[in-house]
Image (cartoon, rainbow, N blue to C red):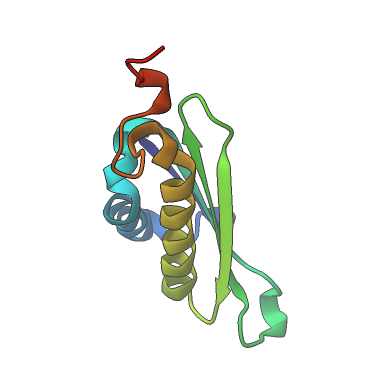
Length: 115
């Protein structure tokens, strides 16, 4: 799984990129076998105008054989926005990839021996 971090003008440097990569691995590492790439976009929504929730994190995951899944979250700080977006991504991946491995505790109908 490749992790790509995008910030405006390269803000934050290598330290921020390392922290973002670690957070991505912790949040969606269990899906690593099903993902080719995860892109994280960090930004400031309204720049110098300020505001209560002006930091935004958009995360796009690319599962193999499925359409990309993108989520975003806005918060007061970059870490809060990132944690919120990664939480949403984990839930979205659970939903999207559940059909690959989980059949509600039962065998798949496609594997039925009565066919």
